[in-house]
Image (cartoon, rainbow, N blue to C red; front, top):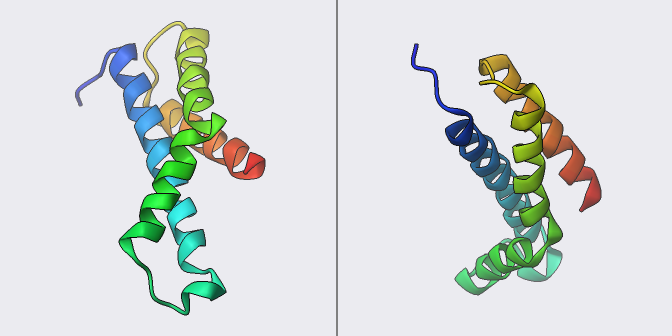
Length: 95
């Protein structure tokens, strides 16, 4: 099994958390009653932009760096999964 550097692990965790949070934001948009079950590119774009403007985007990446630094070593697969789960739960509650 290939072991990735802490820098690559940071990116993997950050991008995974970003993807999950963006997909959840987009899903919430699709559930809006005003859209009557129809979604447009403009509505999806608004979801992307809302996440991009949010503090979550920048905070996630900072917290990932701290997580990997705190371990002081490469994380194993369970550590990566735990980090992703922890961050998603935290930012899911803050939105």
